[in-house]
Length: 176
Ligand SMILES: CC(C)(COP(=O)(O)OP(=O)(O)OC[C@H]1O[C@@H](n2cnc3c(N)ncnc32)[C@H](O)[C@@H]1OP(=O)(O)O)[C@@H](O)C(=O)NCCC(=O)NCCS
Image (tube, rainbow, N blue to C red):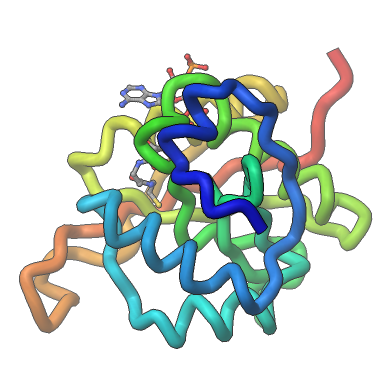
């Protein structure tokens, strides 16, 4: 594993590879989330466990041995055709070059054979980057995107923002 910091890898322009996470990636996911200053920072333990137990429905982008972006998701137990994307993030130095869209397309392509036809995620009203990302991915796959209210701010016990549900279907790539 290289100890090269993400900023150096970005400057060197090496092409990241996409792969499913390993338990050892959990710490880097936690760091990316903490540094994003936007996402809920769950416990470091949650990310380690996620990388072990939900690796098949999660993907990381690795550049020079560093995880520089990721998506973590799960197939909803009561709706096995639906992939719920819990969090997606890209290190600041790697943003704005299509990496998040590439990771999301990669994950959707990898779960297509498992019968996943729908993507769900929730986005808070102020997260325009995330809204743009999921809109772009829906458009690029020829899918419809609809939004419904899921959790209101007063559903949360703390000062959490409301979370709106975004549903993309069909999630498989449509022929042009
Ligand atoms: C949201 C995030 C993952 C986007 O990563 P990225 O690699 O820069 O995104 P991409 O380059 O793949 O862009 C995908 C689309 O989103 C748009 N987009 C990305 N960042 C944007 C921003 N800050 N403002 C407006 N649009 C944005 C791009 O223009 C592109 O749309 P287009 O194809 O219509 O031009 C990244 O900003 C991030 O990690 N943010 C912090 C964590 C977060 O908010 N995660 C989402 C909630 S779980």
